[in-house]
Image (cartoon, rainbow, N blue to C red; front, side):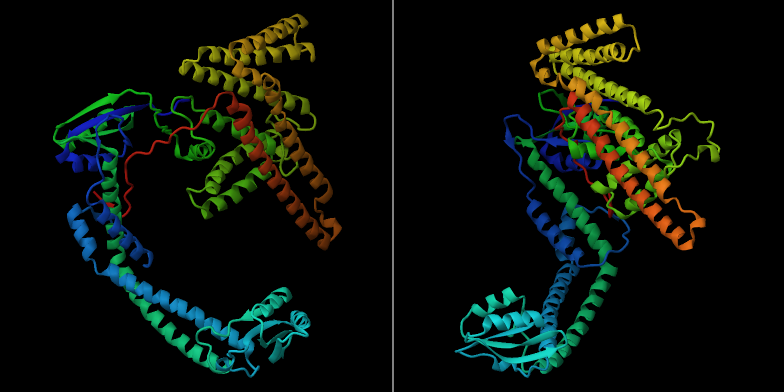
Amino acid sequence: MFSTEPMQKVRIIALDRNMHEIVSALQSIGILDLRKSRINVEDAKPSENAAEISELLIKCEGALNLLEKHDVKKQKHIPLQKLIKDARDEKAIPRTYELGEQRQHIAEDNALLDYAIDSSEKLKGTGINYGMVSSERFGYFAFYSDKKSFADLSKKLRGSMDHIIEVRKNGKHVSGVIAYAKPGAIQEAAKEAGVMEIDLHSRYMHGTPEETIAAAKKRRAENDKGLAEINKELHEISGSKYAYLASIREMLEIELQKANASGMFKKTDKTFLIEGWIPKRNYDQLEKKVSEASDGRFYMESVHDDELAPTQINRPKFLQPFDYLMNFYSTPRSDEIDPTWIFILSFPIFYGLMVSDVGYGLLSLIVVSLIIKKTDPDGLLNNVSRIWRLTSIAVIFFGILSNQYFGFQLNQYIGLGAIPTFNWLKDITTVLVITILFGIAQVVAGLIIGAANKHRHGHDKHALAKLSSAGAIVLGAVAVSAVFFGQLNMTIGAVTGIAAILLILATVALSREEAPEITNLITHPLSYARIMGFGLGSVIIAMLIDQAFTPNLSMGIPLFILYIIIFVVLHFFNMVLGIFEGMVQGVRLNFVEFFSKFYTGGGIRFRPFSYKRVYTKE
């Protein structure tokens, strides 16, 4: 349960003539994570077809990006040489590229036409002629601005050789043309004044602004007509060819992956060698598949070396977001105990206690369901939201146990009055003790796991140091409860206290690496008291909102509506605050207080040589 999938490294040796069939079989079965062998023989090279397949794939991918997606019926995979010939001869690919280039040219042309129209609209009525604003002696600066910026510009230009030759005032704006003798000076002044420059030499700006607008709109209409014809033809190609091209692309991707895979192999004159990692349970399955592909002409063996095995974790789909979050933090190593199950069990408890309100839990379920529908299934937000959805159930559970419904106590009104509950305000000491006991239990569990990991790696002294640290925490907790809180006999407190001190000294003696952690033996379990602090804070805020803003019809309709709005908004913000703090603190308690006791991380994720087919079948 707490280990990753057991892995085995294997070596396969087979004849060159069977390479394509074996590689295809390995890709099809999808259970071998390829590795470069350390054996000192010649490296194999990627297939001679790799360059051509890659070129054809790029062309096919580019064409598909220009076409509309259509539902695709799966096509049967065709032999490599026929695939290359079909991809090379397919006329829809170059025609799609040609239409795409024409469309891009029209788009660029329309952008210039739009600029000419927009700029000329601003300069209408100024009387200028674009063909006449050119001179060897002067430059010309066209502008458009609000009146204040224009006034600032005029002030900056006063006394200079720059002068306005045309201007038009239209409502709050001013446009016109300025002649200047000093290049750069007018642009600097305009920038300081916040005046927008209009490019007088843009293509399609000829004659007067009015003439430019008329000519540009005419050409724009012609372009739009041409664009409609291009889009129509692309739509027709999409309908008739998208499915075929999508299957060609997928087959090229599959063949390119196989062609490049041989770069991971070793070779001799007549044989080739493959190494990689598989789940141990799949050894016989791999051996059978390779035997079928090579007609029994192969040799396969287990390899034992010091290479770290990749990490594969098998977990139910609804719990896989926890693995996503773990990988985002650091992938577990294959040679250490996987802590994710403890994280899965503890995080909802911590989070549920800190929020603990049935209303907030139900509202969270609604909000998070919308987020999951709208976000990328493989993205961080989606995976965090799926964890949030699971933990919202814990919020509802602890909300029932604490009898909290948006701050109100309603169990007795909905048939749950017989359920044993706790009161955040009256049972604060009990809740505090329980949260600290949670902390002690999880920190001790972390130290025990750390001891198991150290023992697995042959560091027995460090393993004993972890166990002595765990014993010090447990005995120290017993001593404190006896001496300071009178829960046990003082004699028991004295004995356990002395034993705890001796275990701390043993920890230092056994492993100096554990010595800096001594202070954390006290602070980390106490850190779990934050569960009580944040949970109590959320409940008190909810109660204050209820006391101050619970609406009542006796206050009149306007105030009733206002109070409803304030009530809903404040509870929403309290819920968001509780969710944020619950998520952050719940993750922190696991990743800092718990994982720091044993977790190394930095594992290598298992990535089998495989391809997930969407548009094709074998």
